[in-house]
Each structure stands twice: as structure tokens, then as C-alpha cells.
Amino acid sequence: MYSRLYVHVPFCREKCGYCAFASAPPRQDELAHYPALLLEELKSHPTPSSPLRSVYFGGGTPSLLLPQQIGYLRGEIGKNLGIAPDAEITLEANPGTVTASSLSAFKDAGINRLSLGIQSFNDHFLKKLGRIHTAAQAEQAFREARSAGFTAISIDLIHSLPGQQLEQWRNELHQALRLGPEHISIYGLTIEEHTPFAHLYPPGSPLLVEEDLSADMFELADQLLTEAGFEHYEIANYCRPGFASRHNCGYWTRDGYLGLGVAAHSFFRDGHGLRFSNADDLPSYRHALHAGHSPSTTRQYLTREEAMSEYLFLGLRLTSGISLAGFEEECGISLESAYRSSLTDLIRLGLLRQQGDRLVLTPRGMLLSNQVFSRFL
Ligand code: SF4
Image (tube, rainbow, N blue to C red):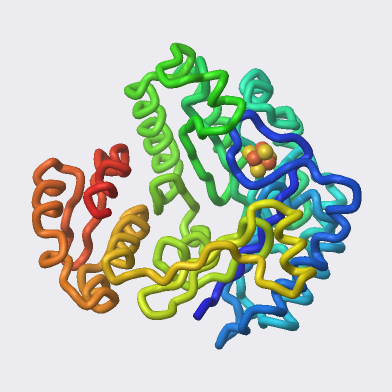
């Protein structure tokens, strides 16, 4: 049914201008009471048939919870659901919310992978983005995490920031490489609806980076990171060998996962797949649990066609692509029969490539991945 657990922490000290995630500054005792709500929800779900292979505390800003709260949650998750001895246990942390001692305490609480939301090493851009930390604080947090004993550290970087030049992005990448993380996630800034950035930068805004420059930034990242020995294993993700995010790979290969908390999504391997998601605001989530109801507000059993689309647009994100035999086994139809004309077109356009049993995006296909995926919807 599921083998992975995602825990959403919907709090941030301040809201960043570009962010559309479910998060807000916590009020009064919300932070203190949130773990109890998570446990209440956890106990309402079936237990997995084998211990969890990964646990991911995401957000929001999970590092706003105290290490003792994370340790308590980890203990209760282990007691109630079981956690495999070699499970990957990730905590997302905002560099503006951690100290040398809290990082040490998170490590002692059982976190073995840290994902630091650095986003930029340039104070001008950090300020524009509305981040609560400076570049110096981000570097300090990284070094303190290393001293605390974290051997798997991921950092996030954003390119295509308003007014950003290619050389500035090159500097960002060099600074990231100098720090020496095991994993780097690279995103191009997207302007999401209902965010302050959507008002600041309406479509066509001259301050935004041109599409060609954005593509150059993606390609520069790919060149510098692969030259430095990183594996490009997913459209937006690079790792040192052996340090791919096991939890996130589970999403792309359609492993089942349970999502706990406000706005958390779950996927169970039931039939062609069952997706459900929780109320996306804390009062509704809390109210449902206190009334003894499920906090989920959406629930959808996938049809075979939907499962087929998902298999493709999730699996093709990985540079290893998808297995043709795997597709047929899971969906009961060969890829050729299901998508003959789309496949022929996309291969002819140089966006997809078949290598034996694998179908993969070409480098150009990665740049235009949304167009590729739209052919499988
Ligand atoms: S810290 Fe992350 S989740 Fe929080 S507002 Fe900023 S981008 Fe969004």
C-alpha cells in the first residue's frame, strides 16, 4: 500500500514572495500543538505491510519545530508504522532557523539527510525573494550541519531570478560547489498564481529572465555540475554517486506514500492507484481531526489511462527514464500500442530517445519537458 511517509509542516517564519506552498507564520501555540495533530492523524491510517523505507519532513519550514518535537515524532512514527534500520530520514531546513546546537540535536533526533533551502548565495536576490536569511547565514548553516555530522546534505538553488545574468548564476554554482554538498536541486523561478510575485511580475514583465537565457542557465548548471562529478539523475536534481534522494525517487517511480499534515498528499498502490489529500488550512485540518473525521478533502481512484499518463510524466523526469516492459507490466498494455503517434512524433523531434528497454528524455526534451508530458495526458 505504501512504504514512504511525508510529513508536512505548514509554518514559515515569513512568507517568501514567490511561494505557493501551503505555509504561513504560526500563530500562538500552533507550533507546540501540531505534532499531536500529526499523531492523531497517523493513528487513523492503516499500517504499512513492511517498515518505512523513507520519512521526509517537508514544508513549510520543518526546522521551525524543536529537535525534541522531531525526535518525538520520529519515535512515534517508528512505534506505530515501523521504520527500516537503513531508512532515509530527511528534514528540510531554512538556514535562517537553525543553529549549530539545533542541527546537532536534529541529528541526534534521527535525521540522517538535511535539505537546506539556500536558494541563492547573493544577498540582493535573497532579499528580492523574501528569504529570511543572508548568504553568509546559509554558508554558516551548511558548515554547522557538516560539523554536526550530517554526511548527506542537499541544497536548493533557484535560477532565472528577475534581472539575473548568466555570470551571476555561474558564481552561484561555483559557490555551491565550493561548499561541497552531496546533492543539489536546481529550479528555475516560476511565477505562481496568487503570490506577491504574480502581481510584481505579470506575464511578459521585462524584469523576468528571457526563455533563452533561462535555458542557458539550465545548461550551464548541467555542464558545471556534471564536470564536477555530480550525476544528473532527475530533471532538477544532481547528486554525488549514491546520494540521490531515495524518498523523492519513490515519487517518480510511483511507490506508495502516506502524507501526514495540512495539505499533505498521499498515494496508495491500490488498483491503478489511489490519491487523496488533506485540507490545506490548519483550522479545517484540526477541526476534522477533533471531530473524529478524516482530514482528507479529495480522494480519487485513478483509471488505467490516468495511471498510464502518470507512469510516463513521473518516470520520464528521471534521466534513467522508464522501462517499456515495466510500463506494460504495470498498465497492461504496451507503450507502443497506447501512444504510438505521440512517441513517433517526440522521437522524430529529438525530444525522446529509446535505448533498448528504456525510454528517456533527450537534453532538449528536458528543457521542453512540459511539452513532452502534455502529449501523454
Ligand atoms: S521558506 Fe519555503 S515554504 Fe516557506 S515561504 Fe519560503 S519558499 Fe515557501
